[in-house]
Structure formats: structure tokens, C-alpha cells
Length: 90
Image (cartoon, rainbow, N blue to C red; front, top):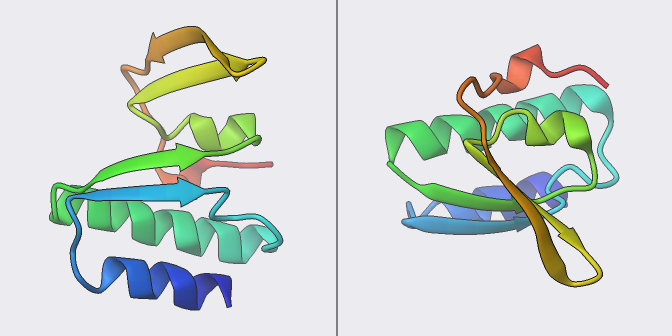
């Protein structure tokens, strides 16, 4: 169901995608596949992805990481060397 929802969101080639825990309840291999698709769409279609995750490993693929604490921004970090989805391990 999760993969179908993601596919439906991507089919219209939006300029921005809001992804709330897109890998929740997915096994590792499927999570990497989903993240790889998101990564590909972002690069090929110049799509901005705003992704919420509790997984610090997934945050390593972001260009910018914004951390929240008690509903407030606690830090903003620019990631000069984002990892590819296939390089993530958890």
C-alpha cells in the first residue's frame, strides 16, 4: 500500500513532495527501493522533497537536515556530502 501511495504521488511529476515517514512499516530492502525512487525523482525532475523521518540514517541522504524539539527548530545543518539511498545502512 505504501509503495502504491508513493507511486501515485510521483506520477504527476510534482515540483515538491511532502513525505511523512515514507519507509514506515517497510522492511530494509523495500525501504532502500523506495528511497532510491525518491532520490531518482528528485534529481531527474528537479523535485524538492521534504521528508520527515525518525531514522538518523535516512537523514544522511538529505541536502539539509532540520531537527525539531518540542515543535521548535533546534538545528539546521547543510549536508555537503549526502549519501545515496543504496549507501544507507541501519
